[in-house]
Figure 1 (cartoon, rainbow, N blue to C red):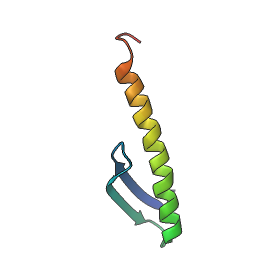
Figure 2 (tube, helix red, strand yellow; figure 1 turned 60 degrees about the horizontal axis):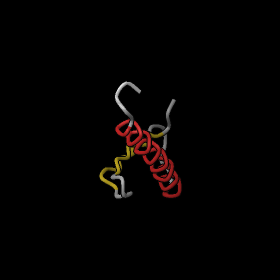
Figure 3 (tube, rainbow, N blue to C red; figure 1 turned 90 degrees about the vertical axis):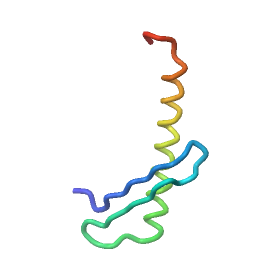
Length: 61
């Protein structure tokens, strides 16, 4: 079971559009929130890389 429901939306230049977090079973610290934002940012950057590669790929690949 998740302890925190946490959503992050960012631009490709690392600016935040949305950060929304809800503790499910107790409060979380500022340090934990910063870690979640850092983890989300890393995943979002990977997603941007994959999306760019897919857009640049020739049709049928």
